[in-house]
Image (cartoon, rainbow, N blue to C red; front, side):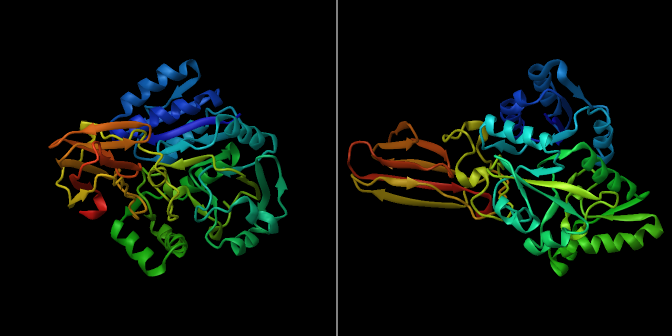
Amino acid sequence: MPALLANIRLNSREKLLFFKRNFGAILSLFDEFHLKIRGDFSSEGVNFCKETVGDALRLYQDLPDGNWVYATLEMLKRVSNRSIFLFWEDFSPTASLEEISNCLQVFDRCKLDFLPYIGFNTPGLPNWENLFPLNPRHTGSIVYSEISKKNISILLKIMPKAYVFTLPSVVSKGFLQEVLLERQVADSPVKIFSPFLNWLILRVFGFPNNHLIYRRLNEFMRYLKTEVLMHPLSSPHSLERLAVEHLPEKTVMIRYGVPKIELFANWDDDYGFYGTSLLQRGLYPYSTIVMSQELPLYEAPVCFSRTLSGCERFPLFYLPRAGRPSRPSTLEIRVLGGTALVETGSEQVVVKSLGSIRLYANKLSFISSSDHSDLEIEISIYADELI
């Protein structure tokens, strides 16, 4: 089985709780763990891993936080398995442990090099049925093809914005090492990261041409011993590699796999395909009623009143179109007259006159009058995109 490797940042209590839940859900699949945790809640994360993993855990807290590639290369030296599951704190399993375990076993048995584990219809990653022109091989859970410098043009014709390496993936130790080493060799003494330049290049040239512009720009800048970064040095995102950039120079061929079912999903990022994040599916947060410590600290940008007839059952539900909201949207329902019955899944809550309740907006709930008389309510919507 692959080793689990994580070099992650926990900068909020919400991320810490999400990490604990999802790391704990899958740790039984692995027998080798390599972790470095950065951020404000790193100590809590490390302590949790020590308690749950035990002797199989290797920690790398002494490695520098500022250079993700260097730190991960050092961690990779201690990995004994042939393959690695790259764990990220913002992904949650959507398949069963048995289905995930089966994919991990097939990955090693078929000697694959790359298997993305994020959801279907993700831009830049093919579904299994898209691989047919690449003469694929089928297993019960994975379809895979051999991608080389000779046939990568076929992958580009199938999907012009296809990736040959993404971070949420299972990857062979050898291929990950090549990706990391090529990034490290490209390192220059002087590094420049400009959010404005990044925005400008993306705006002018678009995606994926922005990747090629950076590559061409740095071919010149290296003569000046300088590198212009697309992402901060502490971020791993510069490793993600498009097929249009080809395989790493020393990589002749990779076995590129695609799972037949979705294995994991991101809690807030829909990758440009609406309805794929856990938030948009109503699968996160895990509760419907908002706890007091989770309340937003700003005035509701949208507020309206409504009178419900005695027999009306009104849905309380809102999904933003924003691809990556910074936090879940919430609703505050204040009862101005009458007594309300709020149905949140299998739970029913009675809210009396002048009382209120806070709900997560992406979890479908219903409100009605508990005694079939008219009900007056005021609804406040707390959503970042409405500010």
